[in-house]
Length: 177
Image (cartoon, rainbow, N blue to C red; front, side, top):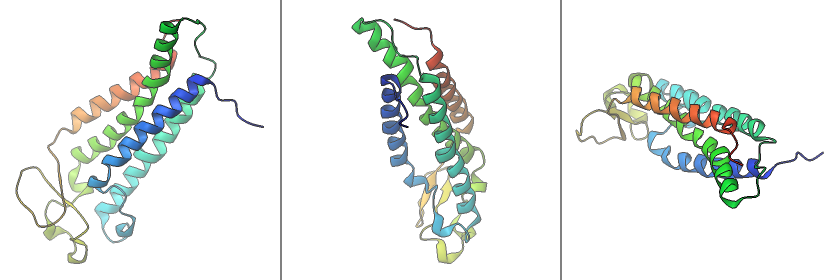
């Protein structure tokens, strides 16, 4: 039996997929999924586990929540303006949650950098220095892969909560139509 998908859910699915794709395009510089180093480098293992949970599992859970919350909540008015605002607020805004989930992952990395990256290349096994990044908080030059962390973990956490909170409440916003 096919699952009925309403137009409001389709709008949510479209924007959620677009936004999730945008997040996937900025992830590689942080190397969250270095599966080839999973058993060799503890920081790579911790990054992969955190990223799998925050960038794969939680987005799927929120997607399921969004689809459930939006079912039967389409516009009832035929007015173009009211209907468009309805689709924008209830269909597009919830899709922004994916940016909040990315900010959660980034906040954890910023708050606990030594857990996810070595601070210098000397702390990385010589066999993996060409692939395993280290972190820095200044503009010092390094010959190995490096990620720049500026220490805004709490800000990322706050904005992550705002993104996810607003996105989670958007389907329940009073109808404009």
